[in-house]
Amino acid sequence: MEKVIKSSDRVKDHGEVFTPKRIVNLMLDQPEIQSKINDLQATFFEPSAGEGAFLVELLKRKLKVAKNKSVSAKLFNTKSLLALSTLYGIELLEDNVEMLVMNMITTFNIEYSNIIQEKFGGKVNQHVFDSAKVIIQANMVQGNTLEKITSDGSPIIFSEWKPVSGNKVQRTEYTFESIINQSGPTGTVQGATEEMDLFADTDFFADLQKKEPRMKKYALCGWTSIYKQEIV
Ligand SMILES: C[S@@+](CC[C@H](N)C(=O)[O-])C[C@H]1O[C@@H](n2cnc3c(N)ncnc32)[C@H](O)[C@@H]1O
Image 1: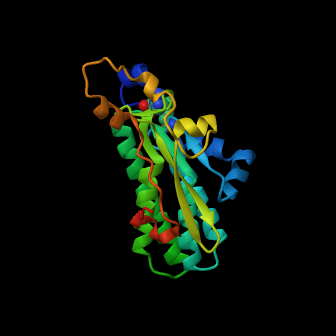
Image 2: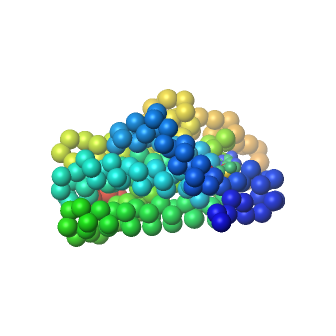
Image 3: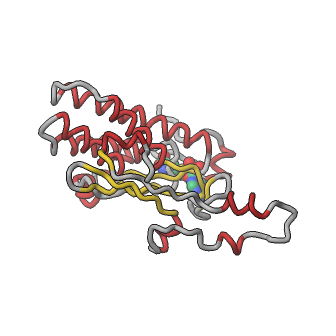
C-alpha cells in the first residue's frame, strides 16, 4: 500500500497528501505532457514538490528520451545531465525536501548506471554523478512558493542551465521573483528594502546581507564539469 498521508495534522496545516503512482502516470501520459517530456530542453516546475512523486517520474521518463537520442556513452553523459537540469521543485517542509533530494539523486544514479552499462556497454563516470548532485541541490529548493522565499527568509534562487554549442553549459542564477516577473538575470530582490524595518533593533548590515541574494557568475563549462562550480 502506498502511503499518501503522514499525519492528519500535516494534511490540515500544509495540505500534504502525496499523489499515488497510478495517478502520476495517468497525468504524465497526457499527450501534451508527453510532447514536453520528449523535448529534452523543455523545463518542468513543481511548486509543491513533496517527496518528488512527479519529479522522480519525470526524471525517469526524460532519461529514457536522453537514452534514445544518444549514440554513445559520452553523448549520454551530457544528455542525461541536460535532462536532469530541466526539472525544478520547491517544497516547504524540511523532511520532505530531504526525501525529494535523496529520491532524485538515487533515481538519477540508478537509471544513469543501468543505461550506461546496458545500452552503451560503458563505464559510469564519477563526474556525471557529482555534477548531477550539484544540479539537484540547486534545482530542488526548500522554501515557500507563494512568498518566493527560502526557510531563512532570503529570496529563492534558481539556476538556468543553458546548453551552449560544443557540449558546454552556461549556468546563470535568477531569483524566483525575477523569473515570475520576467525581469532578467540581475535578480535584484525587488521588495527586499521595503520589507526591512530600519528602526528595528537589529544590525542593518546583518539584515541586508541576509536578504540580499548572493548571485554568483559561473564559468562556461562542459556538462560533466558542473560539479567544479567554477566562478568567473
Ligand atoms: C498535496 S501535497 C503534494 C506533494 C507532491 N506534489 C505529490 O504530488 O506527491 C502538497 C505539498 O506542498 C507543500 N507545500 C504547502 N505549502 C507550500 C508552499 N507555500 N510552498 C511550497 N510548498 C508547499 C506541502 O508540504 C506538501 O508537501
